[in-house]
Figure 1: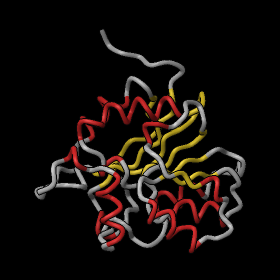
Figure 2 (figure 1 turned 90 degrees about the vertical axis):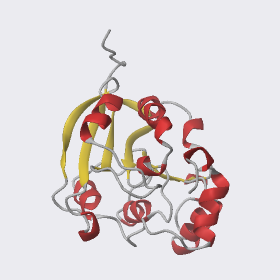
Figure 3 (figure 1 turned 60 degrees about the vertical axis):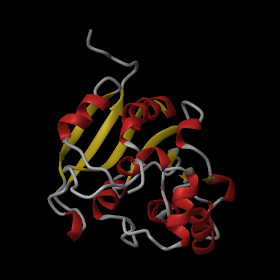
Figure 4 (figure 1 turned 135 degrees about the horizontal axis):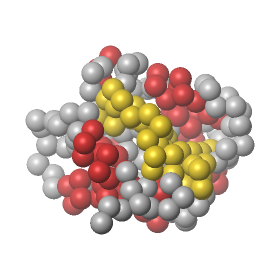
Amino acid sequence: MRHENSLDQDYWEQRYHQDQTQWDVGAITPPLKAYLDQVEDLSLGILVPGGGNGHEAEYLHQKGFTNVYLLDFAASALQNFRRRVPTFPQDHLLQQDFFSLTPGQYNLVLEQTFFCALARELRPQYARQMFEILKPGGKLVGLLFSEEFQSPGPPFGGTAWEYQAYFEPYFTFKHFAPCYNSVPPRQGRELFMVLQRRDRPQFIA
C-alpha cells in the first residue's frame, strides 16, 4: 500500500509509463460536456488541473475556446496530449504543482478526477487554492465521488457533507447534487457541482 504522502510527481509519472490510468475513460465525460456545451464565451480563461490525457482540454480546443490551460504533474501525460492535439498552444500546457499557480488567473476550473487523486490532508488547501486562482465571480465546476472506497487509494472517496465543509467558506453553491448522467461505471457514485467564488472567504466563528 502506498502512503498518501508519497503521491508525488514520480508516482504519477510511473502510472503513465505503466499505462495504469484506469480513471481515464478515453473522452470528455457527459456531465462536463453538457455543461461546457452551454458556455458561449470562447475567451474564458479555463484551467483543467490534474488533467492527465486532457480530454476536456481537447474538447474545448476543438470547440474554439482560445484560453484553455491543461496542468499536470506528469510530463508523460502532457507529452501524450501534445502528440494527440498538436495545434494546442504549447505554452498552455503546464507541468507544475497545482498549489504553485499564480492567483487570479482563471474564470473557470474544471474538476475531473483531480480532487480524488490528492492526499486527503490536502483537501482544505485544495479548496483555498481554487478560491485563490479564480477571478472574482469565477466558477469551479465538475465531479466528486460521493462514496468512500474499501480499497486504498488513489482514488480517495468522501461524502457531500465533508466536501461542503471544505468549500463553503470560499464558494456559493449554485448546484451540488447527485449526477444523473455519469459514465456507466460511476453511475450513482458522483456529485456534480457548480460553485461560484465568493468575494472573500467567510468563516464561521
